[in-house]
Amino acid sequence: MASLDIRSLSFADLQAEIQKLGEKPFRAKQIYQWIWQKSAVSFAQMTDLSLGLRELLEQKFCFQPLVLDKAQSSEDGTVKYAFRLHDKHVVEGVLIPTKNRMTACISCQVGCSLTCKFCATGKLGRARNLTAAEIYDQVAYIRQDAMARYNIPLSNIVYMGMGEPLLNYKPVLESINHITQDLVMSASRITVSTAGIAKMIRQLADDGVRFNLALSLHAATDDKREKIMPINEHNNLKALLEALQYFYHYTQNPITLEYIIFKDFNDSLGDAEALWKFAKQVPCKINIIEYNSIGDGAFAQAEIEKVDAFQRHLEDKGLVVNVRRSRGKDIDAACGQLANKLKDR
Image 1: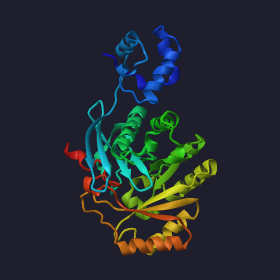
Image 2 (image 1 turned 45 degrees about the vertical axis):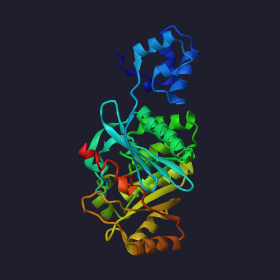
Image 3 (image 1 turned 120 degrees about the horizontal axis):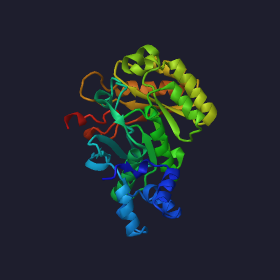
Image 4 (image 1 turned 60 degrees about the vertical axis):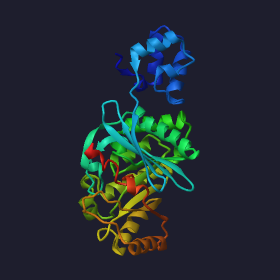
């Protein structure tokens, strides 16, 4: 049985393989279009290739697509997908329909190694990175399902599911290239969220990326951030701020600062002031995110009055602030909840 996943080949590599088979060069382009523009996951789907060539490809190569294991629908219209990989691991993606957007939230790793205290995924540890094709498959599936369910095209993609994108750097960027070039989605509609790896944020700038960057900040002092995000011990706020400034200088893309607000931890006006002092140093907007329980009782959702006061304090200082209300909480599809139920599989 063939063991080489054809989707692991670059176009140049595919051309070389097709040449070895004695086929004309244009066949490589046909196959590549079937794979990345038409999202084919079998050679049988490539109907403009001869049966003989399809059989030859079947002998030499394979596909390792993810398949839907389960889909759950929330009362607010959010859909969570559990996708099973070829090696039986499971990752999750989410479709988030709102009035103005149809957003896919996708994963880039099986689990996560960063152990943020408020996140269910971090409690799983990291099993492995996803390939560019496995990341792409999530988008292709959710894109198709959005049309089937709502007859509305996918408008946005956020790399905010399971895993840290900048610890799976090359496949993440390869997947974005396929999404922008082959599925023809603007890079301005894609956001990559990181817990904060300073040197890799600088690498994004050096590579001239055009997509949006979001930093999961969640606390604006090193003392508090280290209590909930161990990564801060080696990527402190000074290093992150310098990396964000570097990123903005070379890309001219403002950054999104994500701030999950926890009751009696980071919800005071003093915390808001600390956030302002950090945020004023780089062009950005701030998303305040409601905390979503992962069942361990370590944190609680901040009171609405305190969230409102927090937001007003920042807006009075001239910052752009949005409060993101939770979607899909009833199916554990909200921010920080992905993989909350995978432990029981």
